[in-house]
Image (spheres, one colour):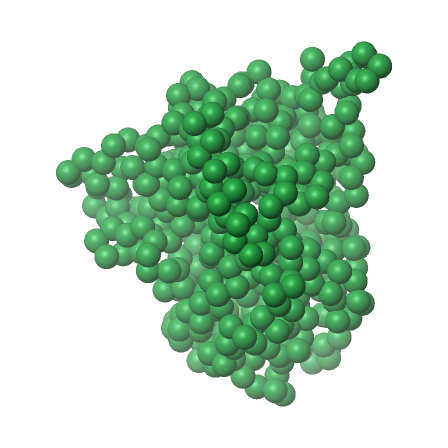
Length: 500
């Protein structure tokens, strides 16, 4: 039988009982028009067509912290867990590879439903689309509201300011929080709700220290923003709780400190000034079309924002690694290689990369070399897809532990208490293993999705396009069908507002 095949009430095979419902679900995410820049060129040039030498990853035997903080390490380290997954040798999950083709077919069905035959029109995964919830082009409207004297470079700086803060606020909102748009009165939830909220806060000058220049984010403005003011902006109350509010406020406070670095963020201490740093960097190809390497952008985000991550995160030699965690499915650490059991994800940094590239490309026609270094995002929508399609299943002993944790958490005021699913903290070995296998299987899905769509050569979907049109959206829609009251993923993660 195919994916989710089951016997219907009349005794016949009801093969579409879940997939058809998910396909008919009206997604909250409306994608923008075809992938074009202001001059009509493709939004992203394939990395294979940009001939710029890329630096190798740091040598882990010499500087393991630098290696584990690099983008190269995410796929390389996750591959170890992925290989174990394909042999069904994981610590916490059973893997049924017979479900892989069905999972790929489901992703393809979502992509065909929304984009066939215009697959070239699929935008890359990024924050821009979340601002478009309900089909309203809010970013285009924002750009149109600024006077013509604001040039393309300053417009791009402003969008980088907005997108960076919005991404950092885009941790899991929980199942109860909603945001009522001040502009339309409509109610939004989850990532789109946080996007609309952050946009309206940006327009109101919440993140700027200068009342005459509300459309910016600067260190002084963030320093003035208290947790209480953030709660007001996000409409948080006892009746409308937001998971990880204090964590988000702390993240923005630490961002203010990070922005005081003039090398990356200029004298005005704005995220958008990274554009000037990137355009003048020695590795950037300064022709009629600027080409920035992903490792250069990555270094700005990892080095420039290193101080924003909580000090309690995994460290090597006193260096915080950010979103990187020990995992039992990794090699055991030795006296000389104490880093080998750590697998890095850097999900928010990757989400920033995907999101910040879009305004730079659309407004300034900046192209990026090395985009293929980025991975699928190891978060609960992509990972939830793998569980809800039956490809991976939590082992019984871990499921029991997670269910017990959910029941205990449900006793806390404001926490969900329906549609019970296993619950774990972000650093739990179950979650770390789940995220690592997600990175690997997303690469496999990309290959299979392109094969099923019969897309070859330059017509193939990029990983960012598959994430946008298929796996992330498909994971959300399966959650909406499988758990219609909460729409939560099949595994719930306790969020502190700084990881997911």
